[in-house]
Amino acid sequence: MSTPNLLPLMAEILERYPRLIVPGLGAFEWQYQSASLENKGQLLLPPSYSLVFNPDLREDPLQLLENKLVQKEFLAAQEAKKTIDQFVAEQAPLPIMAKEGLLPTLEATFKEHAILAQNHYPKINCQPILRKKSYLEKGVILEGRKKKTTRGWYLMAALGLLLATGLATAPWWGPQPAANTRPMPSILPLVTEQQETYFGLIQMQRQQLKNEMASQALAQAEAQGQMGIALEESSGEEQTSPWQKNSAGSLSSPLAQEEVVAEKTAKENQEEISPKHLDQKIVVIGVFKEDFNTERNKAQLEAMGYKVQVKKLYTGLYRVAALLPAHPHSRFEQELSRIRQEVIAQAWVAEE
Image 1 (spheres, rainbow, N blue to C red):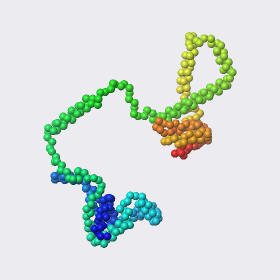
Image 2: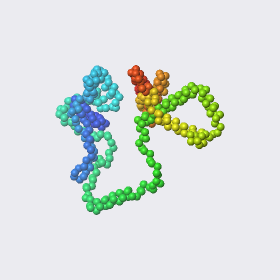
Image 3: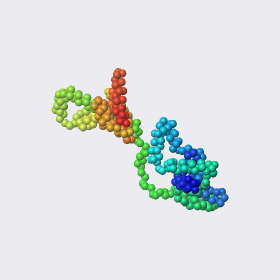
Image 4: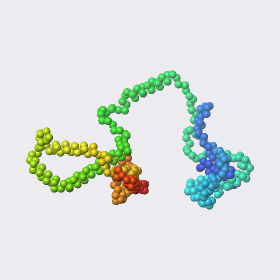
């Protein structure tokens, strides 16, 4: 292949790609020059591209990739070559894919010509098709700098002062609505995740205490049996008026007494709510990002005898808690409590 036929081929490749690598010789690549101003005449030079030769890129990039796969990835030579061929086939058409025809011919042609071998390469007169031309590429003459007078400075300062005064005083954004005395809601979350976890535990403890008190009251009522019924009948016979006498000797309504008793009971329950009164404690197993088969895991754990609670937090996470003995006395009970926590935690971690 002669040089006149070689140059159009190289120009065609370099119009489409930023670099042309000739194995064993070097690489032709486009060098970008940004727009700049000349000192004389204030001429704006447009951004341009110049074709340069880089003799450092002499090795075939596919050969380098094959050596890397063989030496560092410990692949066989045939397997590495097959992998590279598959990779090249999946990519866009690159100049290196013409390796079988064009590049060896280029290499042989450069070796045959002594001028080319001495790095006297012909100038390729072509422009890369990268973007449309704009007015910046046509050479624009800019006006020189003009001295600003003192009058201009004073004028700019006055305009700035007027603008600042207008922004500070005049309601340029429109009439204001009537004053609103309600406080604006905070943009911060009202309850953090730790606080919500704590409140959830307290709520579970309260519910558990209520259930225990109800079961104790039911057991006492069953134990008393006929005694409670006899007391009710005798009290019904004695009470002939809806009004009763209190300790001070004045009349009072039974409805008012019921309200006082209810308030007293609620206050006593509130004071008695404490983990030390419970024979079980709430153990938070973990907080998970998603609901990993919650119903199935919960049903399996409850079938094994565990009491499990799954609650969705306001952050979208799911908190898994279990009801375990609060004060294990022996080492065996302590170890059993630890194993129970691990079993419940693994039911969700395995899904994750």
